[in-house]
Image (cartoon, rainbow, N blue to C red; front, top):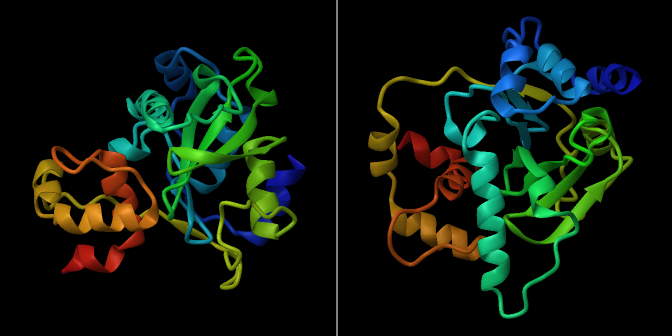
Length: 231
């Protein structure tokens, strides 16, 4: 896979990545096959972050927001449609909603999707990027590894991504082990919902004035405000 070879030159993988999952089991859970390049990416890098900005979802992740096999992909499809239809002038989707499968996220809360069309030919799937569940969209004609290589090499500038993405160099940072100091509900309760709502509105992310804050907004806030998590 030439793209993966070039990507590892720019972003060296960890010496000992996390063990790859049982792909037969994962695909059986999902009810579909996954692209071969994604499986190779996971085997080479494991969970982590490219350029301290772009993270891929992976099977059976301990955090629901990053779990490729969890409810998040379906939930995001539903929320995209809810946000789209709530606008005064609903914008058209560049791809059928049912073909979008979330598999990554950025530090700005932008989501990466496979365009799973046709569903039985995963190695032909292209990549779509959505700005925080709203328009605009960006579509990349190529697989996920080719997309990552284009982004980190600078040959493609995704309009939704910051222009200074590569200013600090290209790198891959393995994910830290999940700390078991508190249950997810306890951690969520310790966060200040007022601050999260204030940040979301300033970022342009739609958020309800009352009630439970969606988990994907909480996770986006955590990625944007890591220093506050240690207070």
